[in-house]
Amino acid sequence: MSERGLFIVVEGIDGCGKSTQAMMLASWIFSEFKGVDSVTLTHEPTNSKFGKNIYARLQNKSSDESQTAKERMLELYVLDREQHVDTLIAPILAKKGLVICDRYKYSTIAYQSAQGVPMQHTIDENVGFPVPDVTLVFNINPETCVARMEKAGKNLDKFEKIAFLEKVKEQYLRLPTLLPNEKIQIINANQSIEQIHADVAKAVKPLLDAFVK
Ligand code: ADP
Image 1 (cartoon, rainbow, N blue to C red):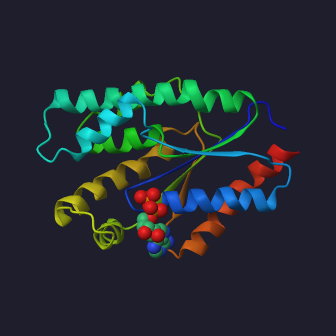
Image 2 (spheres, protein in one colour):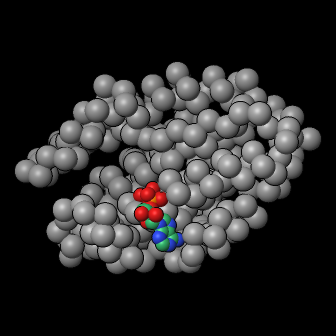
């Protein structure tokens, strides 16, 4: 068994298939790796008081677009993450457990910088959090995601949403270069659910082999 446990993060723009793949990954781990007896599947923002504040602000259509409001949002994501790490992620990793997290600091870096907060500032605000053993960034055409969200009945301004997700996607794609010491892998998410899962399984298998050894 490894020193710390295993920490896997899934990332990408809204509707890219993160939660679908996180669930498939958890069940694949149980079926393939008999030595693993628990997997914690978690997500951000959490349901902490900070997370609830974030969800409320995201739902507010007449939201404040000022730089102060953007900075406050960044601060809330970091506070929510601090609590998530302290109360759930770090204790599980310390007990050599396995955590799969749907969105983490990379979401804050990509989204908040796409909204105009300097990218280096978003990176600096997230220093000190546990670095995942691997982060899988699902790279997908934003039009596909927006079509999925519309199909699911979500009310959105289509063109505004596509343009914004395009910016977020670009920021995500910069992460492997900006954070060369963190293992960030881009996965082609413009594929079937099964093909993406096969790519995910291939990406994490060496880590799991080492983890259960
Ligand atoms: P996210 O967690 O990234 O927001 P979800 O996993 O909830 O995305 O997927 C959004 C929607 O797209 C769901 O209805 C899901 O069933 C569907 N979906 C996910 N992956 C694919 C795929 N590869 N092809 C087609 N539909 C998909």
